[in-house]
Amino acid sequence: MRSTLPLLQKTDFPPIARRNLETLQVNVGYRCNQSCVHCHVNAGPTRTEQMDRATIDDVLAFLAASDVHTLDVTGGAPELNPYFRVLVTRGRALGVRVIDRCNLTVLDEPGQEDLGSFLAEHAVEIVASLPCYLEENVDRQRGRGVFSASIRGLQKLNALGYGATGSALLLNLVYNPQGPVLPPSQRELEDGYRKHLREHYGVFFNRLYVLTNMPIQRFGSMLISKGQFHAYLSLLKDAYQRENLAGVMCRSLLSVDWRGYVYDCDFNQMLGLPLACNGDSRTHVRELIGRDLTGNPITVKDHCYACTAGQGSSCGGALA
Image (cartoon, rainbow, N blue to C red; front, top):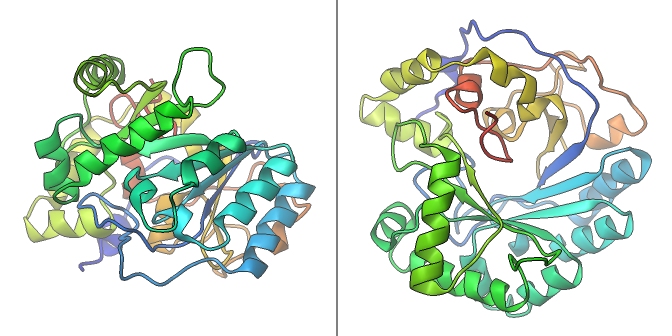
């Protein structure tokens, strides 16, 4: 796989700094039951990296000593980490909101038959990736049969109360474009998703998050191989919106990798760009217990234009 970092180093992206920390996003490992073309983590079934119990305990110790109110658990398929349920259960016991970044098909995996019930029991918010509401497009991007398995997963979650009107069990979906283009209007696409999924599959959900594809890892490598990398980067830069700077996720989020090292965001984690608070050395989450990062400079490169282009893009969808 071709590295995109050398192509992102020289940047004119404006300097930005941290505000109060609100969200701890924890990548518990790169193992996944899918291998998606757009995946910025390069996750897949053959990846073996996973967070161990000692690091899980470090993350929980940080949470307990902080004012963080959201624990955002991601992967890979985070549910495949053997300590996923420990992290969720103890995180909820600390009183924090817990988000599970779920690919839906993991609900069909052996040993995960009770996963939906577990998530519902602990009132975990689910952010589920469904890159399109059309079967052909999803299977082209994620593999044959993935769409059908995703719909079954959504139906299981709906049966547990997820996404229902008046329910506290939140189910949000995530859309990614099929190629090197900016995503369409989040509001309009959400209406299309809602109508199609309800009419064809009886599926309902709360919100749709529209994310811009990041020119790194698997997607970035594909762009390089097709000779589209520089054109895509130019597209992102030309669509830069200064007002989106106020809402980019790195201002209030801290990203933790499977070994416990911290980064400004999940994308910087994948590029190996450490948090700028310890020189060029990596910083472990246990080193930050009790430490205030407000005002700390955020490490930026050209990939950051993906978060500020057009309507903007963050873990919570469009910014505009």
